[in-house]
Image (cartoon, rainbow, N blue to C red; front, side, top):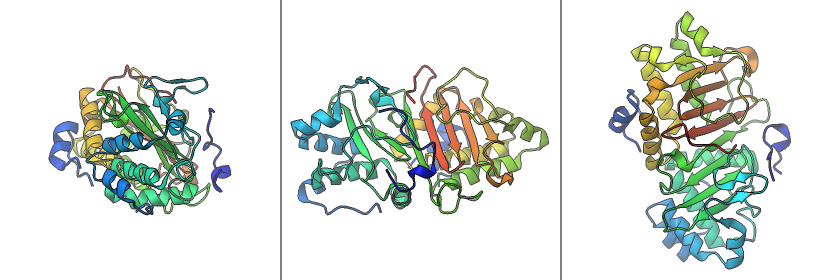
Length: 346
């Protein structure tokens, strides 16, 4: 348990470069898509890092595992955990998908380096330092509270690598599921300065996303704000898709300059991730009608400091949920697919 975990009652395990032109074309909005301390690299880990994708490095990692290691962290594609359900698709705000932490003696130095390389491949280089800060603040750094699992077999049609920890669920699936972005639902968060960080969330690497969303709110007129403001927060993990009735202000009813600003929010949201995952998320959104099918809601509950700078907000459409819950600190739940029939295990 990290030194900060007791400060967050929600942070507990509940069960044992898309360029501007591409973004314009796919999302239909005018936007500008705006080091974790490494281990000593050995020759074999260095060779693995030369692979072109995180999935290729997953293949090297898989081949390096002993039978005993595979027994602990490798699973069939549709493995059902007795308590957690379909383990591959699970998402939570603080959990370890398997028991061994990355920095445990369970892994060799080469394997730990490959895991770090996979993580660096999922996240854009511009975000490596920011994620390093998040992990240092939340759990002492990379590898101390994170764990991994591999579902399916690398090189076959279905394979997914899952990295979990406090304020983290990330995936690399090589498009094993063509109708799902990011390989499935993901989670990120940050407790930069203790439990109650204040309205401005000092040092929080993800707070600029909320700043961008609040710019949209500032552009809304009185009647639009009435629509956009919602009293009660949804449940922490309420990211399953639903058929209509999305709370907040419909993007389709915004003016062109307001819609452009929402497009900038979307660009900010997908910015941390590799170009392929960004593209897939935008294609999934386009398949369901784009931002015009979404609504943007700001929640009165959770307004830290009662300053009308909205800490909690949500962009939602038929198969798109991006739930930014900034109280008491930042938790963000993400679920994006091309159609709403995809189920979520959260």
